[in-house]
Length: 98
Length: 484
View (tube, rainbow over the protein chains, first blue to last red):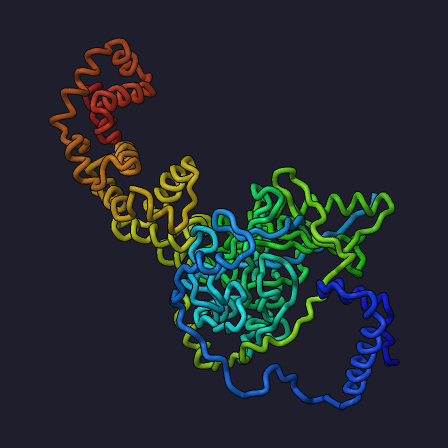
């Protein structure tokens, strides 16, 4: 696969997907950096990984499971004290319309 | 007109019946005040780490065993990234590459009695999101995160269904199964089981799949049927007018009875899945699976067969009585206490379910434990029919009193209301004689051969005894006295 060249449009599309508000003056620099990152990934694709199981975690340990018990108490007041806006126990956020 | 084939796959999200959440020790109780059951882990505070609830594994494994699936001895949680205020972490922890349950199948029975096998692709564990309220917050959205982190098992089927009827039969089967297993309480009014329907159509006889749409969050079987049928009609109309189907997510609006686009795919998100770094892979052993298997309750099909075999019921009655574990247990208690399974089956099916239906109750564990009429009391009532203390007709009166909570013990009620069947001939003969004496014309006609009039006399006697006499005995006595 030929190396991907990241264009200005692709930078803007990725920024939107990532919910990032980027400075227009930085777009060219991002494009150069992202092209380099993808080139590195491309280089890693050259490694023969056939027969190697994917590693989801570097340790061999197994996740310990927790008993099904309620251990948390209501701390809504403390959490909501630092929320920008609340009403009747609800957190308020800018309107989300589906 | 082109003939279209409908292709449906379902994703069923079922909330697991646990006390605490999948990754935190916050309560999963339904209906609490907003955000009182959302802890720092559910809220995605910096520095917190998830821990896995052991019970969600037991339930997922039990479900997998019940559908004959493969249980993965190693399963891994993955992070699905998306940006929405009902998920404050900015991602959902789910299972993508290595879910706990892979494969399996269920057999559904269609209205014409035929059986169809639906393949299950996979079932994976994940966390539920919070709830968004779009009204009443003066232009803002209110967020309740009590539901965030509630354990879900998402059951994904193959696109094996060919009609809304099949999809509903499959969803009902899954609902019955998870309720039987105690995997979920199955309370759809509280969102314990929600369906996403993937629907596409293709010209009959062709193989290539059409473009599908996903209709999200359908929370009743009736709506599922209507949502699918509407989506099929919409797709046919689009294709037959020369348009093409856009792959999109749609929402079923039960008020307007229509589906409409929910999210524009123009800015389609890439979920950027990757293995959840905060959780290690989970390894389980074959011994663990066997332990879960041994603790599994009797499943619907086995129960139906046992009812047919042990109680000599017909298949249709057995199916109705085994529709929920609670109803099956209720019936078995009535049969044991009453000493007659067929009588018990008849009364539970006709009288109890009839009365519950009139009161808009379904035979769930909650409603059967809430009603005044206990299984024990109904069993005792049937025992009194069997031993001749009361007639079936009087039993219905007692049933009504028990149902309405006017009495709890049938024997006490029968005694205090004087409902005991009059079977003593010495008591009945004077009544029979007076009826004959007061109706000389009918008596004469009977003696001339109009024997059908026997019904008239029996009716009169039954009325005078307020239904307490044994009708067969009355009939015998009337004939005897008329011909004397």
